[in-house]
Image (cartoon, rainbow, N blue to C red):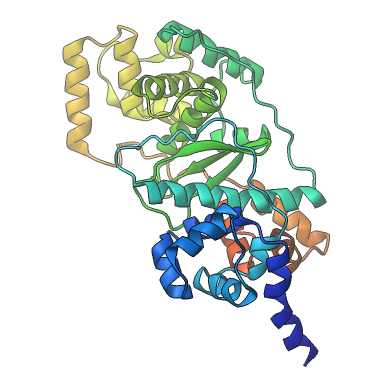
Length: 369
């Protein structure tokens, strides 16, 4: 009898500490419009707006129905997590092909993951944020981008060798990398700051090692160079691609290694060495004047005819591991999934979605209750 009574008291307790932003967050994660949510709960869309704006609070009964409709514990709305400070705006690469609802859902997942990271940091010391400090002049040209990438490589202690694992490098430097779960394939890789940490999100549909490395390096460029810039500019995207390519493979090395004629056997060897796609290598060779226009066009035509994946496949994409490893450490400390989920105000199922997104496919670590 007492246990049932405690469950009945939960909505009333949550109402007292109700946080409007949490309702918006849960609704965006479920990609539900206010009107649709209102219909399921039995209130007006205007009432939902008032809840989200903090102009009124739902009653305990309404809050219980909101939680049910959003498949979210009532504690989610009163867990003490205000909206995190978000520096700048997210750099979505595909603004024209994604809807606002798709972008909102992806950003909502990031904030849900931020809750998990916040709870983890109450128990563990995650890697400190150690990103290089580099800047571009306002009228930056290709040489400025190259210099910035080389400076970042030097700060990361890479010398002039290849990057062993781009995603692991980001994680070691304090960046949280996550695979986007159950979101539109139209949402490409993007990056955003949640609180004091940057997060990088990658799309699992691009299951190619070279492409995943480039995605991670591209997003590092946005984090280092474009933190105050308005997203969506093609100039910024080209800068990020050029930075990422240079970060993965310095021109000083490629200039000596690229074959003087179109030799795809040699290019495949270089692909394996640098973890850079054939297309990117050919593009770099053309940009450096090694391949003339007609050679470049012929190479790109051949690559287009061969289709995807390219010859010389490097295997599956690079995957994050930070949150999976953190979950393993918590398990060793007898910190259960229920404890972490309760502190984050979410279900254990949602917690495991986040942990899976931040874990190796081989690990897929979850903490056991």
